[in-house]
Length: 190
Image (cartoon, rainbow, N blue to C red; front, side, top):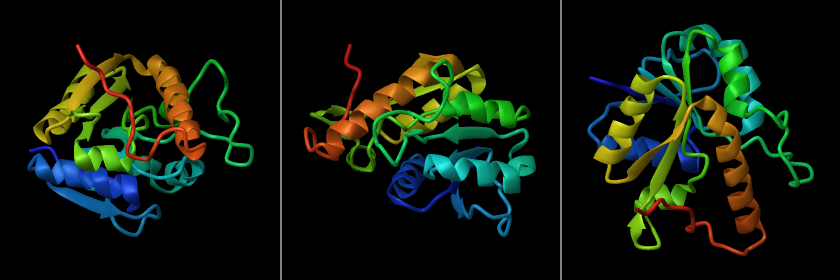
């Protein structure tokens, strides 16, 4: 059986943990430091983007062989006017370079905690966009998402994380600018 470890106990970490639990998947929360061992097959990094460097430094070896889900949006928190990764890259791609033995996915960065908890956006199932180079890893995460009652869409290979991060940036700036609520979001309807 697949298990999930979540680093981060904020709104997003809690919402994602609730989804996994609703899907019948065992969940444990571990800290950023190496105090509690990581046991999950899937590890969700539900932390702000600047925390990724410390996690890689303290827990990088524990992440080898696991599916690692980067939910961050690499915003410039000083100006809130851009992303802090190279224009031709993404937080997830940079993380994958640092964790070559992990299967890195980008997901949940285009969702707000409220839409994950409600499981709907505008009356439609909340859609979780998933990008990554490992098809089995994407399927494993998608199975959890759909078992929890949400929609999962394969957004392509890890190179698409760049577009997902741009979309996440747009959504955050709209919410901070009070043009949309924190219960708004994007969904994919066919």
